[in-house]
Image 1: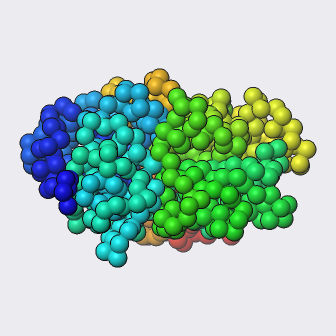
Image 2: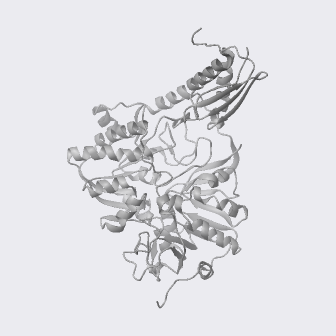
Image 3: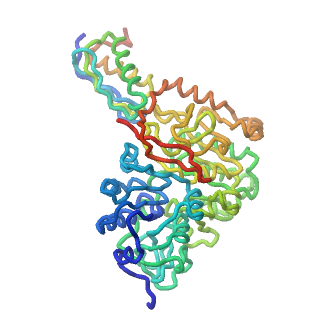
Length: 473
Length: 91
């Protein structure tokens, strides 16, 4: 084809004008199956680049090879939504000189749009792409090797990066429509053996729980939804990725069928659970920033009413039209909730980073009703605590906390408490839950934190929210 | 009190596996998924439980998966009964 943008990775890097000290970006739609980050950074290391800022939408266990490139000085700064596995462990122990900057998905979108997070070169994996760069997370030929569905987290990078390289494992005939990323935003196309292992997309945070406690929590959370005052025809909903918060969908569905109530849309990370309700006609539209499993990815590939949105359109605080502003209710999980309703979803009880900010603070703040579902204890680890280890979602945006020992409503929302009480739900003071946890497990020793700052949590409005310190052994 | 090798418990989440062997004084070797926050407490529950059973000399190897104190006491007691042959529940 004339004007073909197809080149080798080396040529794409050379053409991009990438220099030491610049910012490179990646998306995490393949989650634990991602192959692009490791492949590109390995090549950049071989080509002798140094002091790069890696700005990924998120990082996971699969990115542990980055540890070596950080030691070599290839990567000296990281911005991300999450960190897991050995990379997170090393960074928590002080691997990097500069602290990792954590942003929510909406916060990252806003920061890219406003120029606060300037991307020099974006390396974006796509399951199909034509020679001019029209790219999609959906398969478009019989030779397709991967599928990731929505490319919502990659769209801000494609729109605002100075230079965009698409990596694809299926080069298809022009025009690759419908496209997610427009050829007008793409400078180079690189064909590789594999951009990601789609079978690993639903690994990590997603699990379909058979745990009786999760099922109890889900049933209680469904009762909160149904009696909250927001459960009426045309309502909108988002769920997080914890076992209990996913299981809630099952119980809400039963009530929707019984009462003849339909939802207008479901938002966020879209799962097979949501696709099922959509196909049954119970949810009008799916608004999808990230397809959380293969069923969701296949649905977005074929269904016109299952719509992709960028992280900006999903959850930006700076854009009044972002979808979270139209969201009625969100059901989220947590590692810790404190007596002021603040939530931590990033740092474990041992002080080691082991999660992701995700859309938690975005959806909690802007939805009409936010419900956190978490057990009082996980083993001996308390989830309702006097003070969160790390502040991720401020308590002013958190309305209801559901535990197996009772439901706590934020005193800022007395009308919700009244409705739930009237429906016969057992409400408790969140301070009593924290006291109950201590009575069962004893007073934990403080986490052995050091003096070095290894992470900065930047809120969705761009303000510094908290600092994460290194952990001493 | 004579001590033989004995054990109790499992490696399931929320449980603790306790092995008791002959030793000089009470020595506890603890591996725990929650050691950073609860290691000190778990060790003291183990030693107090053994002392309560009249055991002052034993080497204890414990692998903890977030067990609560009541579980730790039960597993240590069961291991001690097996190690000494003295059934504290019957007596």
